[in-house]
Image 1: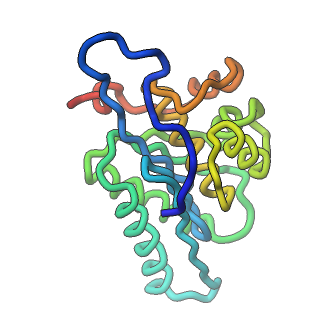
Image 2 (image 1 turned 90 degrees about the vertical axis):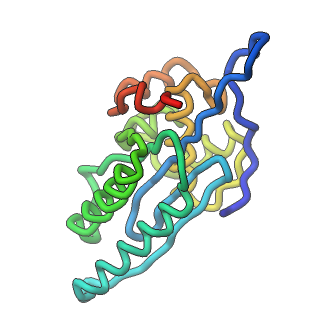
Length: 199
């Protein structure tokens, strides 16, 4: 995992006397064939791979299987996985393979009974910057500033923002965000809250 610096997770409000609130384990996943970003309690990581248009079915399968295996090892056992939803404006590469990889990872998460939230790219950008149309560089800059994180790539920045959104939805935000940013949570396909908060 890449070392990052961001605040220790804690409830937004001071804890009342009595047992400490449960701290939720949330993973953020920016799924990509060329550089899947992963964010967990331990920090951020990236899974870089390359392929060619003339790759065989076996080579394409092996590439996607490798990415999925690394992602699931890094994610481990969490209460919630926040994945970025497919972008309908993606250009280049193979949309078929991108969709296949997305479903391989989501299938592996579901097989572990990990609840999955699907976050549209525009919601991720809006939560980070206040603008749903913000570019990846702006999200990277905003994430580094807000969370005090050292993030080598925008893939890791996206994953960290996705994770932060999941924690915010669970009332354990990593940092305060303006109301306009917080409104992005409403555009997310969240799982049933009971599935996440069960002991």
